[in-house]
Each structure stands twice: as structure tokens, then as C-alpha cells.
Length: 384
Ligand code: PLP
Image (cartoon, rainbow, N blue to C red; front, side, top):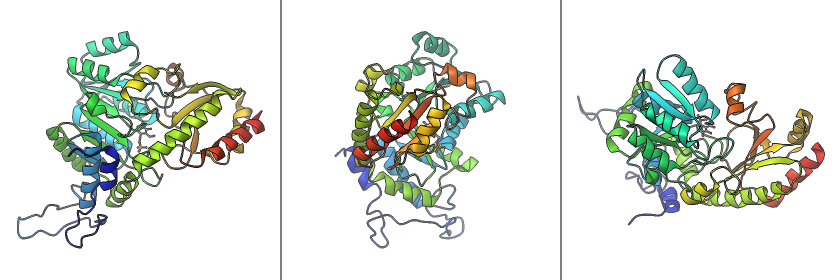
């Protein structure tokens, strides 16, 4: 029987321990494993290559995304780098969103400059720009939807189809929604990547990433390269991630309820000059979001009116929105894109992507939303 997503998330790896019958799978911290005899390795020989704790977390993630294999890595960036390492040789073209996560932008830009591959940053919502990029026969097309930090939504099914027509593999960064709200493989993606640091773990105490492949052989190749370059995730992080994953569905549900309330409040707040959330009819890609997502998510951004001093007063008055990078945890966070998450992007590239200096991004947590709104209210008053 095909299990529902919340069930898969809760049940991942439970009762898999045959030695003691532990309900929760134990952590296997050993870096190495004895051989049964000369030239007779057991299921595992060395933890960089394979680890039982990582195995159960990987199996849960593969099942959640509807893929055949998952490889857990040391960070979201190492997951993205691993995919590029496997798919791209010098001269090959990578098509990436012009408004992708700043760290991804910096990785592609710096390695592109060193000749590891060629990269083209494209507004994937612009049909002509996308068609022109596909005419250059890329090997890999990366999609990030909703985008960071402007929450623009692009048509994943359409882009995956165009990528395949051009002979490329389609890779979707699903960090902002998690498999609970978006299933890229069912929309045509070949590979899904996540920063597990965010919603999947959900407690801001792990840095990890994952590569999930639709195809088994490609998954085996990813695992080989992950061991080869040494980017596999630690056992302890894998354990914490699996523990966090168990509450993924109710966390996302509450985060979305709170986000909707915060969006409604910000809509009538005169100091908010522009509000970005996929639920808003004027948000780029709102209609696509309705179709391809199971919810609008709990990330939102807004432009704050006033000058830098207003911004400083607003941020320092907040008590329940911690000024910090990252997202997807149970606690609410606020970040300033230009000086934080997107500082790795040149000012001109930020401007081209529409990321202004007055843009603030909120990751809505699971606190009581009356308290969240009261906190915003007093910070707006203090900054005016
Ligand atoms: N992809 C997206 C969309 C992100 O927001 C981030 C980090 O913020 C990453 C990838 C990189 O993940 P990590 O910080 O775990 O390396």
C-alpha cells in the first residue's frame, strides 16, 4: 500500500534494529567496520562510504520525494556541488535561475570562471530567455521554485520538459517547500536536491544536504562520487535529521497557518512597500503555485519603507524574529538579503534579480501567531 507523506516521515527507519528491537534506529558512530574474514567485508566497511544511520535517513528521504535513491551530504551546497560534479564536464553548460540562492550563485559563478563548466543565469519565467538558453544545449538545468528571496514560482513541469527536449537533466532545489508541499519528480525532475538544514530537519541544529534521483543507476553514481570526494553526511547529523523529519508534516502545516496570518497582517501595514508570498494573486507565478504546490509555504519577503535607520530600528525592536540566515526551523527568523543570504552575489546581479536593499525575508516558525503579529506591530511602531 502506498503510504501518505506524513506517515512516511514519521515511520522512517522505525523498528529496523534487529539486534535489540529498538523502535527508534540507533546511532552508529563507528567510522569503520570489521571484516567477517579475509576479503569478506560486511554490508559496510567505512563510514564515509556507507553508514547504517545514514542509510535509514536516506531511505526515508528517497521515499518522501518519490525517488529511487538518496545520498545525504554534509550540506546543501555539497549536495548541489555533487550533482554538478557528476553531470558536468569542462565545456558543458549549466542553466541556472538568475535569482537562485546566493550560495548556489557564488558556487556556479566561481567554478564557471575556473572552467569547471559553463554557466548561464536565466530568468526561467521569461519564455524567450528560456528557449534561447535551451537552444545552447545545456547538460543540466537547475530550477529553484519558489525562488529565494522573492518567492517567484516557475512552471517546473514545463521547464523539465524543455530541458529533456534539449538533452539536459532537470534538477530541482526543493528546499523552500519540502516534499510535503511539492513533489518535483512527479513534475518531471530527474534529480531533487535539498538543504536539509532547513525544513527537513526543522530545528536549526544540523547542516546537511541531500541528492535524490529518480533513476537508480544515477543514484548509485551519485553515491560513488559522494564517497570519492568525501561529502557524505555524518552519522550524528543523519540521526538528528531523521528525528526532525518525523514532525515535518505538522510543522509545515502550522508554519503555513502562521505565515498566512502574518501575510494578512503585513498586507494592511502601510510601512510595507511590497509583499512577496506565493499566495498573493500579484505574486509572480501565483497561478502556477496553485497548480503545482500543495500549499503556498511559510517563507515571505517584504520591502520596508524608509531608510537604513528605519531598517535598523525595525530589526532591533523585534523580539520573536531572530536576525539570522537560514530558514525552515520551528523558530521565526528574519534576514536582510543584500547583506546576508545574498551578499555572495554582486550588487548588479542582485539588482538584475530584483533584490533591493530594503528587502527583508521572514521564515515563519511555529510560535503562537498572535505573539508573532504583536511583535511585528510593536517593531513597526518603534521604527516609524
Ligand atoms: N538551496 C537553497 C534554496 C538554500 O536556501 C540554501 C541555504 O540557504 C542552500 C541551497 C544551501 O544549503 P546549506 O546551507 O545547507 O549548504
